[in-house]
Amino acid sequence: MKAQAELCHELSQCRELADAVQAQRKFSERVTSDYSEEFGQIATMLRNELTSVADAASEAVTEASKAAKLAA
Image (tube, rainbow, N blue to C red; front, side, top):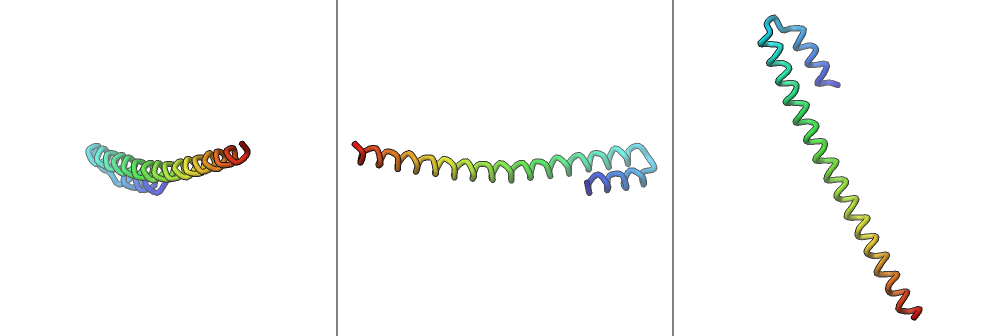
């Protein structure tokens, strides 16, 4: 939202088409970079959570196997 507000302000100051194109290009690059960074952070968090779930599942299988051996 902040980037969009800044873009609107920059566009309001433009006197030539080239200036407006430059402002839009700068905005697009910033948004692309920001979204890419955020996606990387989300992917890392998801990977960590999936690893935790996999570890818990593996531990549960191990404990169930031990219990099954004791019952037999």
